[in-house]
Image 1 (cartoon, rainbow, N blue to C red):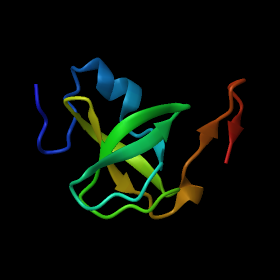
Image 2 (tube, helix red, strand yellow):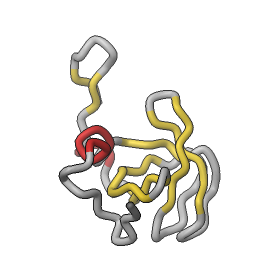
Image 3 (cartoon, helix red, strand yellow):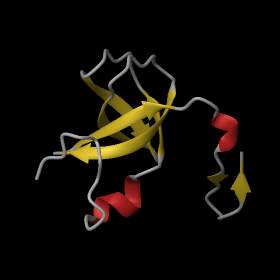
Image 4 (cartoon, rainbow, N blue to C red):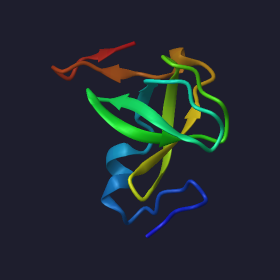
Length: 90
């Protein structure tokens, strides 16, 4: 199945696991081009409607045939992260 509108269907397991997760860009990425991003020490293919710079933090908004759709995060301080032991950190 392909999700061209950047939305992940609620019935897909990938939605609950990845949607809203934070990814770090591993390279500069042009709009609609596929690049690399790091999620939990694993490299994923990522794509966005906007240009992304290496090291930029982005949020997963969808999934399309093995490629994660992402968007830029406007204010990273609004996000809460969990450390490996489950405690919250920012």
